[in-house]
Image 1: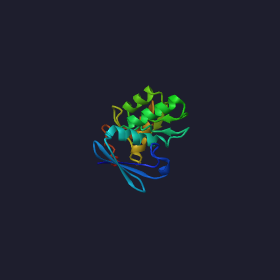
Image 2: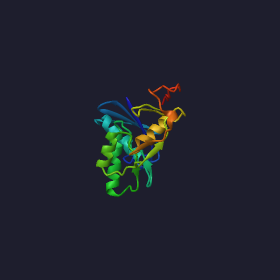
Image 3: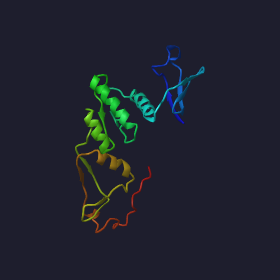
Image 4: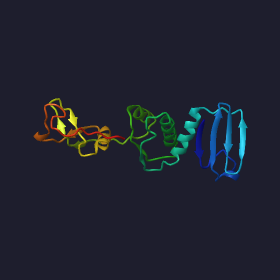
Length: 184
């Protein structure tokens, strides 16, 4: 069973414009539409998961405002495709302007660029390292910001590490520092 909550669906009658609507998919060919006041069974409607995802994506995009920097859906999940498509449509039509996306994957980046959604990319990240081996492999994050640092580095075109000789080790883990691990 799939559930989705909408605050004001445009296709619902104006008498219930401010009512909360709860859609529950019971079978592929029936839908039970419930409002605050009553239930109205509707037969012979087929809702697919893609339709429900598109509905959720369209509702989520309503929160996007001019000038925002956002992850355009743009996570990597299956609903992200619908969010990106809706953002692209709104930008192309001029209904939405001046947004910038920060993609969370290469696949998302490709989709966003294809639809003309501008991307925010850091030109350079400069950060230290806790250990550096002869092959320039690094250990970072012993100060407790591993995930945040990785996110910033991933959004950058270039990464430069500033280290001194005290950070050089023959093999990672050679300094005796605890290995940084963050559970997200």
